[in-house]
Amino acid sequence: MPRASPEQFELPPRARVIPVDQTPGEPAVLSLEDAGRLREKRARKAALHRRERDGRD
Image 1: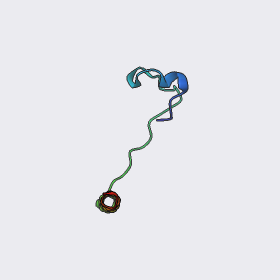
Image 2: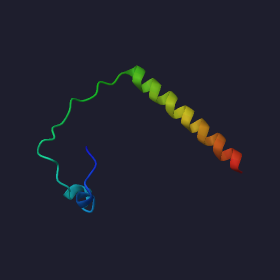
Image 3: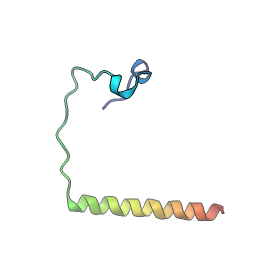
Image 4: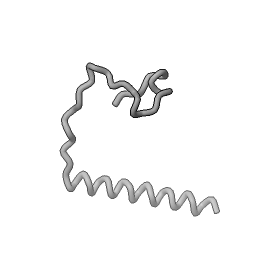
């Protein structure tokens, strides 16, 4: 979805208007390799967060 205009942003999300020319795209094809890469990325970010958190105390 595109970002809402300032006028639309003032409305609750369910009351916003979807542009007429906007059509849904094709769904993404997911694979087990994609899931593995995402899991590794999350693990790296979690480790970085833990290091930063532990360094502050």
